[in-house]
Image (tube, rainbow, N blue to C red; front, side, top):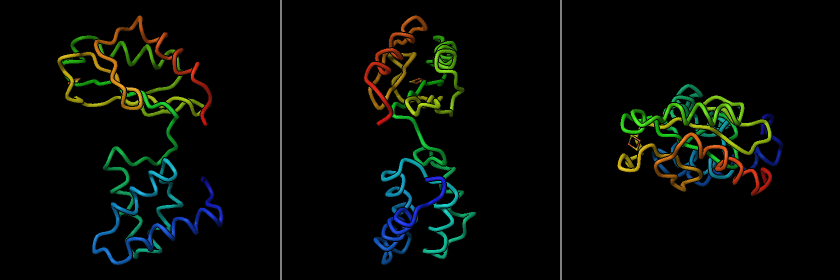
Length: 162
Ligand code: FES
């Protein structure tokens, strides 16, 4: 969606129209776009700005403030490594580093094949099972560096990006 197609633009306009009667429609519009496309690039923010009359700066501020909105396309599998205190003291940084090494990406990045996004998270409320890792919502308790390769292999075996 780097350059919005005619169809894509039409769809974004439809989403904006959906909330035309709302007083504060921005969060609803952005949530629908995020759910539909998986990310909200600048071109789309500009279109939302035209449709709603809100400034691009305001829209950009919201997109970058909330972690569930994304400016970039995310991978099929989103690996979230908790780096909160409880996980950190139990070696979470080494786990992030191992995912980085195997996938060839830094936290916040997505692999070129669109399969994996690596995210470093704050406490996810599972300190009792630290260090905690989540992949598309599935929790991996008491993760170890040694288990990282097998977990990545498991998802690679599941197949391609679509
Ligand atoms: S610090 Fe990782 S779950 Fe709380």
